[in-house]
Length: 196
Image 1: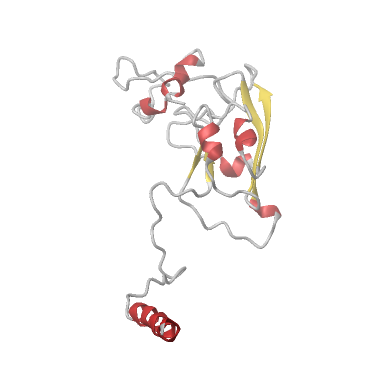
Image 2: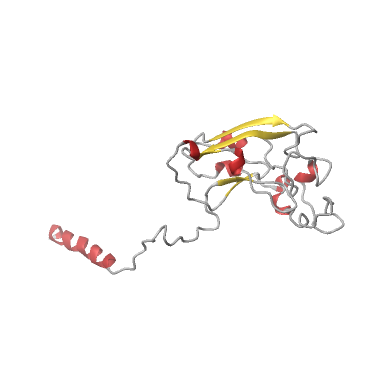
């Protein structure tokens, strides 16, 4: 008796879902927004004066389970300073043919240099074009930023870049009288305050 009712139960499930609203999205004609914390394409962030946040420590490459990140660190010199610290990433590549968008590289970054955007349209017909270089990954220069290499504009020591700064006029650093840089220091991004 139970074997006879099995097909009826199966068709019951089919009929129950037949009249539900269709959830098919008409992509790419109708692009729906992603979730705010969506793991998309990576970006290498900058300090408010334009210096790179990446210090070339290679922790992101070590944390990557797919071995998709390649970093070569180099020493900063006073004549050519790319980051506020002693080192910077002279070569930075992410192979999106290998990347699984897990976000472990983001968690490993001690300076919050590497973050992920909501951009997900990365398909290409060339394998070489899916290996993003440092120039493709760097955040664009905002008004008030200077293209590295240049000297530190937010403070004379690298610790100034690590500690949180108030945005009040008396403590905001003078960067050549450019008001567009004021207020862009992010006190929530202090690596010393991060909980591990």
